[in-house]
Length: 288
Length: 267
Image (cartoon, rainbow over all chains, first blue to last red; front, side):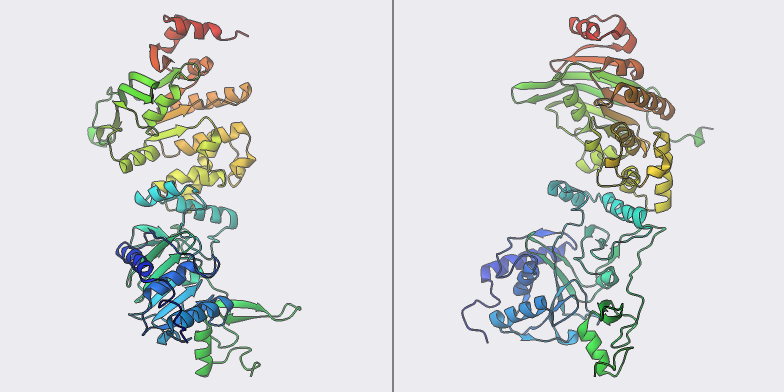
C-alpha cells in the first residue's frame, strides 16, 4: 500500500530523531512539557497534529496501530489518521486494544487495561493546565519551575463556589509523581484513575503548542481535589444499552424527537467485544 | 512562661526591614539613589514625593519586582535576617506570598478579574497549602466582612464591584495570610474622597489591629498624616528629608518639603 513517495511514517529521519529526543526527555521528567519543533502536518491543527508526530516518531514497521477518537475506531478523525499511517508507514492496523502496540487516542483511554510494551499517544489541544488562569507563558513556566500550583486549586474552588461541586468533567488537572501539574488532554475525568500506575507508556503531543510530555509506566498520577470535596471519577448513571456494561464510560445518544435516548459505551472495541461474548443490554437485541 | 511564647530569633526591638544604599538606574537616568532606612515592627513608613521622584521604583525594588543595581535589603524572616536581594527566587516568592503583601494602585493589577471575590481572597491560602474548601470559604467570608464587603457578594466577580470595593477586596486578598510587611502603592489613588476616607479608616484599623508594618507610597499628604508614623520625602530619586510624620509636615526643613506642604489646598 505504501507508494514509496513518503519516508517511513511521513516525517524525515532527522525530524523523528528530534521528536524522539523530546520524548526521551519527557519520559525522564514525568509531566514536564518539553518544547519541540513541531512540523506542519498534512492535516489542520486541532486534528491531532501533535499526536500524529509522536506516533510517527514511535512507529516501527512491526507495529500494530490502533487509532481512536472519543473511544470509537470508526469516526472521521480516527479513520483519517489510521489511513494516513497505513499509506505512509504501511503498518498493520487493528481495532482491538489488546492487539495494538501503539494506540493513538483523542479524548479517551481504552476500557481494556493496557499492558507492558504498549504505547498510548494522546492528542493534546492545550498542554498548559494553568493557561486560563494565568495567560502569561513566562509566568506559567516559572510557576511550574517553582511548583507554585495554588492557582490550580483556585479553578476548582471557583467550580465549587459556582456549581456546588467540582464541575470540571474533562481536562481534569493531575499531579504527576508529586511534582508537575499536568493537563491530561480532554479525557473525561472518569479516565483519570487509569492514568496512574498504567503499565503502558503514555505520551502526549500538542502540535500547535509545540509541546510533548509523558507519563512513564507505573507512574503515580493524582487528580487534584479538596479534602472536603474529593475527586470523583464520574460517568452517566446507566448501563450500556448495547452490551449491558456497568463500568464503562457512556455516550448519550438521542434516538428520536420524543425524548428517547440511549447510553452506549464510548469505547467501541470494548462494547463490540462484550457483545461478541454474549452480553446484551437493554436495547442490544433490537439492532439485530 | 517563656516556653509558650513563639520562638523569635531577633529581639523585640530589632528592625523588620533594613535598607542600605539602595540604588536603581534606568540607563543614564536615576530611578532611586542611595536610599537607606530602618523599619521597625508595627511601624508605618510613608514615602512621599512628586511623580517621577522614584517612589514606585523604590517600592518595586523593596518588593523584589525590580532588581536594584546596588544596596541591600535585609528582612527579618522567621529564620532570622536575610538579604532579600541575594536570596533564591523560590525563597523570595515564598516570602512574597506569606510574610509580604503588595497592594497595587489599580485593583485590576492586584486582583484576578475572572475569579470570584472568594477565590481572590482564597488564592493566597491555597498557595500556601490550604486544601479544605469549607475552611477557605469561611476565612474568605471573615475577611470580606473585615473589609466591609457583604458576605453575599462572595461569589461575584470583582468586575461587578465598585472601585472602592475592588480596592478593599485587594486588601483582604493580601492580608488573609497574616503578612508582617505590607507594601502599598498609592492605595487611595483613583478613589473619590469619601471612599478614600473610609478606606483609610479601614487601613488604619487593620494596621493597628494586626500590628502590621507597612511602607506606603503616595503623593497624598493627608494619607500619610493619617497612617504613617514616619515619613520619607523623595525628590529626583533621592531622600531629601526623613523624620516623624508630624515633625516633617509641621516643620519642614528642606526647601522641597516646604514647597510640597504649602502646595496642599486648604479647604
